[in-house]
Image: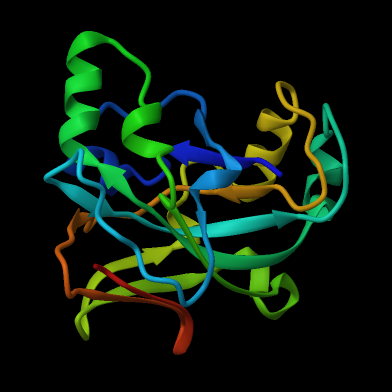
Length: 202
């Protein structure tokens, strides 16, 4: 099982971090040890003083494939869910300054929080409205109509480089509103009015 992530896939998020808009998907990966399943607490690692939440729609790959053609891409996922890409922002900034990869800031243990999944069939034209509450207050709102690169394009693009396998997860990017967490926070992710994710910070 692979965890494939797409960075800077909402223009407003790229702007809030002063990053240029990508011309093609920005891809990075997390190992299986990054997975933190629904309901389990997230413990802030000792190596960082600035962990940020990034709520994302997650695709669950339902069959194997490589070099997926555009007309078949939508058949490679049947369920969508929500996930939080936990990011050690202070470590990431140091990596950027040195021109180093981001793995230690993005792919550390339990940095991929995953909630529950539901059928994609309930969404018209794959339009998904989603949000994140921190301690009961909304801090992020997203609309997948604002994606720079669509779900199907992401699958087509990623499959050129990595064979997609059943059970792989694709984090599709975060909207604006990312921010820090601290011990005692409670994060809740919603698709529409339905809560799909809950995570306590310790």
